[in-house]
Length: 272
Image (cartoon, rainbow, N blue to C red; front, side, top):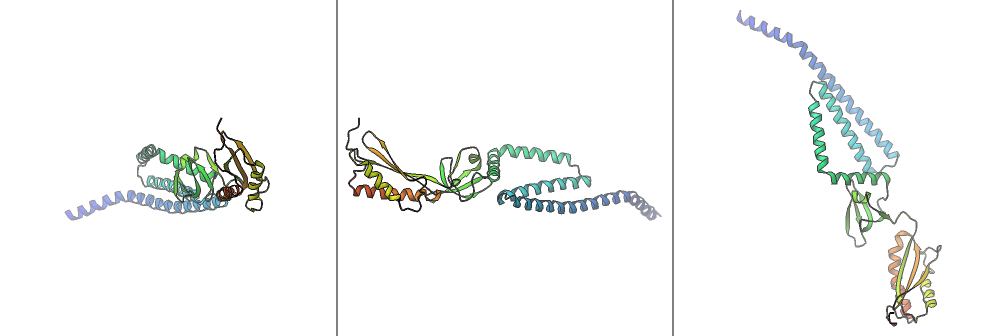
């Protein structure tokens, strides 16, 4: 008799809990369906955004990062929504998450500035990989543009890392943007030397050089100094040819002038 009463009591309790269990089961099942469908929709949205960004020729680095951020943000919202559907209180969780995000942002101000600079560089493209730039007191060829820094390779084959925040907030000289750049070499000659002959000799170095642009034509100028005359050979060429031509003409001009008896750098006249 006692056993029957216990069984009856258990059945009554179960019958009382059954609607509650069924209610939670239906909510849980609905939450799983929403999670599954929502996850698929978010993946479809990010894939569509990726194709649109690719068609807009957005940099692959920025494209991948933006898609990751959007995907994570949407999935976080989906998980919070699903948690609330099954009865989990999400208000305090969102508040804690927001406070944590604020604290991390304050701690990483410099890194966030570099990140924002990287986004601006990838969006507005003041330079790209392969360009020769001068910025922050450094010059070199851009080998990669990362989210927090830009990597240069200088003339000495040294690798230079420049924070993107510095690049986005300071002057950047992009030598590769123009189709031509000016090059020049300068020497000191004596006041008694023949200037017209020096002009002819130096211009003769560039006459048959296919790397030198003919319009505007190369030129030779003279600048009086207290004890010497500075002679400068100026020319125009493609951006990638400047350093090579400067090195070549520096050596060739010394040889051709010395061969003709010019006393380069000799102080033969007393300074005033």
